[in-house]
Length: 210
Image (tube, rainbow, N blue to C red; front, side, top):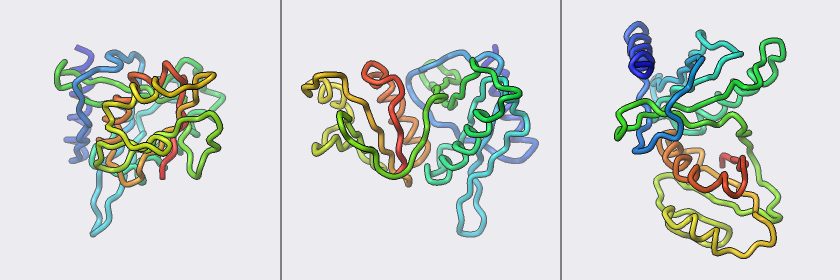
């Protein structure tokens, strides 16, 4: 019932503001239940020839879990700067800070027919180039099923097998690069894919937007 309530809130908000948030879709639920949450919306907006990311967080409460409802059509170059601002605001608000409060991206599980959630609380988005000592760098390009890993190019479905075949004295740190022109929809698909193995190798991979 709680998911129907959340869906209704999104629809009601959209009707009142005459706006829609088109969520990404997947066939799996990473997290199915988030209690004590506040919604944040990032809308897809067109002004003339420009595409804009319009943020509404008026109902967000620092001490709660934040659910980010982001339009899947938006490119990362517009979404991530807004995410960084909101992350920093929540992290720096010591007066109302709740150490147990998490941040989640929402998406639709079309198999389970429910809203699902992808945690990203500990992710720090970065720009530039990382040092690559004992690190495995995965580069995801826009609209491509090929992933660049160090000097190799492989199919996304082969990422896990490829990394397990590599000989390391200690488990490597995973570095993720995402094309800034990639849609938020494609980003979520990639995040769900790598969620299956990255936490076995490195709890929180660094993420760079290039």
